[in-house]
Image (cartoon, rainbow, N blue to C red; front, side, top):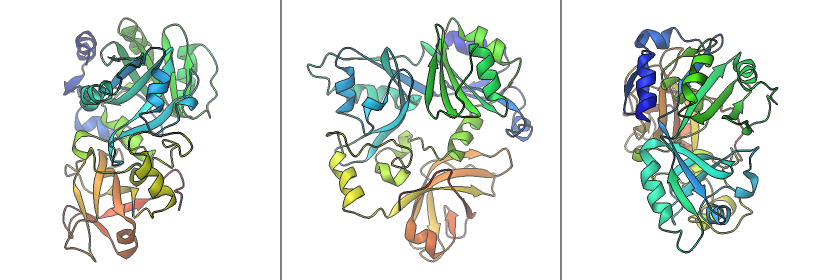
Length: 347
């Protein structure tokens, strides 16, 4: 987190730990008192890092390394994607957009390692990779009045239904996740002014709520503990247009394509609720009551729900879902209540 920005947030009562805002002085009451269906909330997104790709070969370089089709990324449209090992295992997934250069947003804990690994393959290409995590501030807003607030802030109407649309003016870029969820990207110098304006209409909350919104949207976030655990289809990246099956080669492309056309996807990512306030973590194992001798799945992401309990994204054997109930950590642990995803799967 940018030190100047951290000091500013702390002056607004933010309690910060490991680049994440935990709360603004209310602690668990903040979670109980937040109602996304009626409130408009704002979230600092410094727990995400940002890598900038510049140079005349940046487009070609990224097209050869990532699972998504870079031709679909421009100044008006962002794209989900992933970066994989040659065996098709995900090292990181991200959101990519263009503001003259390409900007890749991914967990801050992965930013340095992914930048270093990608740099190994630059060779003679005219492309430069720069960590912009501390030079561009990102603020998320969500809620029923988020669209009106975004319009008011930019001073222009929005196409509310343009999923992953990008709107830019001289000082702000706006990423449109959904009609009720947006992300502002701005400079460190302009960020306090933006925060002051937004806070007149939105309630500042901890990053847990953005995590929860991502989970409810069915958008996975690969973390250090889950690196190289999944191929893209296991975490539904094919369902959110994060994989192109028409582009050329990239690391892991052969495995990803073979799985799509010749194999059968045996694991998928599910959205679920756990009626427990215990600390459920990414990487935790899951068990099926009918096949209790070995794990049947793994937690991808988890976040406390404003409606009590914990919501999770979990990769689970499809056969286990059909065979019986799924439990956290042990066959007799808390039960996962499967919730329909907000998008269809390909099967």
